[in-house]
Image 1 (cartoon, rainbow, N blue to C red):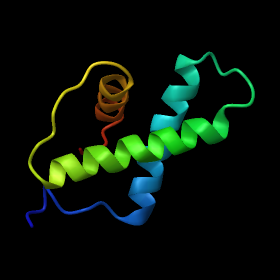
Image 2: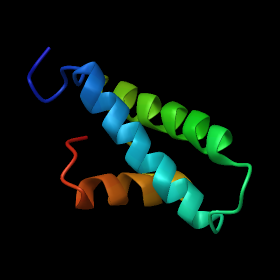
Image 3: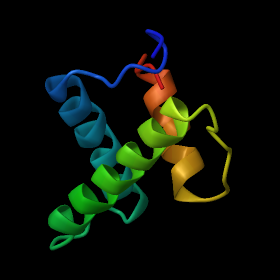
Image 4: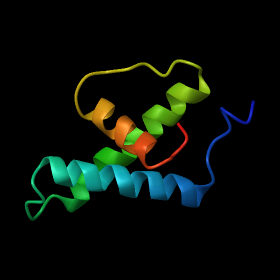
Length: 79
């Protein structure tokens, strides 16, 4: 495993999920009652992106995943 494909530290993963959850909440207009769903969706998205990266198959997809990926890149998060 190369440094580019090594899994992030747990605290870094949590930060990535928090950023992704924020952008999901923003996309739904921060309406009440969706924070838990945003978190679980963000967690799944980040874990999928990290798994894709570790397998060398990070593939662009349309929709929320691309938005989240771009937002994380803008925040300086390595993917």
